[in-house]
Image (tube, rainbow, N blue to C red; front, side, top):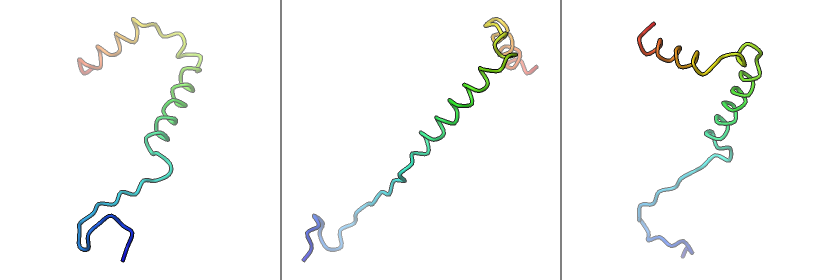
Length: 62
C-alpha cells in the first residue's frame, strides 16, 4: 500500500521545473545589455525627437 493520494491506474501529470528560471536569466541579460548600451558615449547624445524620427522611418520601411 502507498501513501500517495492517487488511485491505482489514475492518470497524473508531473511537472519538472528547472532550478534556474530561463526567463529571469534572459531578463537579466537584457537589462545588462541595456545598461551597457546606455553607457556608450554616442548613445547619450540621442534626443527623443531623433528616436521618434528613427522609429517613424523604420515603420515607413526606410
